[in-house]
Image (cartoon, rainbow, N blue to C red):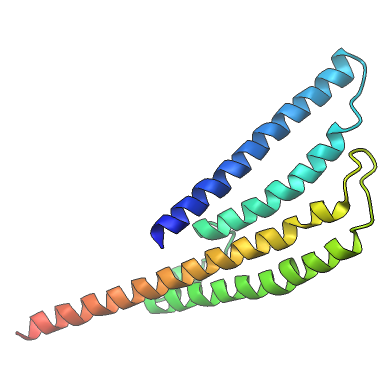
Length: 171
């Protein structure tokens, strides 16, 4: 399970980094073509916009996998370890529900609706842009399930360690 997570992290992180590097190159080309060559590129703005959608959605899945998403922990920091663990599991279940209803179902619906729309500059189907939603939804579900399994393992190992220490103290 750990090697699967590491492989997924490596793949997703590499794709996001590559996309970001390509976006920087495209933005630089846009500036050069507009201000130095005085021949503005018509494709770059649309490429950057669509790339931003994909890198944002994939980045969201990556952040969920790393458990580095935005959260308010002011009350949770003062809570017991048990309450924090249960809250982590509940939060992952909320992520799964959001991913299923909004990202996967909603993303597939909008992809179907926009299948006949074509982007003006690149000439590609807009459904390919909207596929970022269900793809990131599936990745978030995978990461959330991995996070739940990890939390449950941590809970059981902590419980086992506590019971073991209690048994030793009674001997």
